[in-house]
Length: 160
Image (cartoon, rainbow, N blue to C red):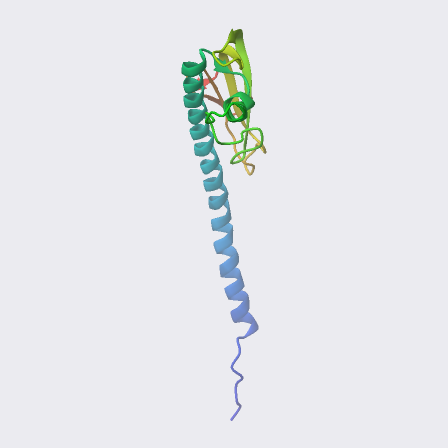
């Protein structure tokens, strides 16, 4: 009688590896898609937060902030709470946020630089199907978030 060792055969190991590879081939694209969807939701939420911060700034200062510094760091230097806590000068959740003053310069109540309008863009830091996002977003003082799939969004882009 032949005694069998207690290990797995090469065929059994190859079948297990093949099953794991098939499961990974199904799971990885779904995880990437979920990550991109999460980045989109975060970008829209961050734009909404910035619009609210701009509204609070406009109410207090009689004009809109034209920079992240005016919304975040400048109030701190004046011993006031910031209008936003997030640092948007670096990519956040796969998106790069850009703020630009628009319209006429305004003299604000505390002397910080203000403007009659603002433009904010949220663009994927690594665009593409497997990047951080595929949509480009735009918002201004109207609070309407607009998007474009191919190019940087602007005031003529589709409404979200």
